[in-house]
Length: 403
Image (cartoon, rainbow, N blue to C red; front, side):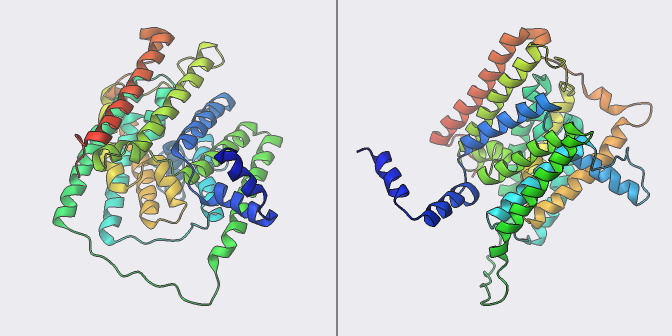
């Protein structure tokens, strides 16, 4: 009898409640492998593109920030109804899906950060806001889905993110040397009282069920696009939390620890998404040039560098900051606020006036217009494979590891 058969029989011989608890832990408590997150993310992103529009994060944050500014009497940009705006729904689904997942896993808790980390959160969030304006999106819209959409801007931002991550990591190394962190005593859990963690799974289930119901209400009404986008991004938020899928780790870890696990996962997800988007565009199901709007190459490259530095200081990218803020991380909540506000303000500056500075950052480049679909896919696949090979080689040699 094989080892798998023995394990299967041992599992089935356990009491029903023990099997249910084990299954619950596997889905809601134990961390999922990165490759599972990579495949699910690509599948969901292609599905969102078919349904309505690609996944994005910073657009929704900008909608929230503009709406807040408008509420307090400051007209920064156009204010929309956050409940009926597609960009807002994409970001809201990610945040609430991750919140539900955190509750289901009993991992939600407000966690304070040291003062210096909060300052870095302010600076990092601000840099991410500025960088995402120049690049036409954060790590999601400017890099991940930009490559899916076959935009040359995604390549330029990828290079910028690598440079920015290296610069940011060099700063963190300097900070550790000059300002070593002090170990703080761990507070022991008080005995007795209300056990908050026991109620978290029930609240998490309620949150996820409410999101499903809201999606159905959207679909049954006149807002079917919003309903599909909400259920899709809720699934993305849940999946990213459970797999700890993190773009920062893909760019940071090869320089910091030499580890390339998340680099391989992100590269896999990018390749799968490219195939899905390319098939949709090639068959004429969507306009080929749609969402290939990024400013190549200056805006994407410089924006990527600024964003890369910011995400290292912040400890999270656009998507990572959002799903980790949903866990109650105070620093990441601060990052999210300044990320949203700085993006809204800086974009208003860049598009205002007769100069229209954002238009001078470059022009959109849809790669198949210059290389055809076959060679575009071959080229982007080659870039992802090269990234993985170099990261894996560094994993074994530590040639590029800063620490």
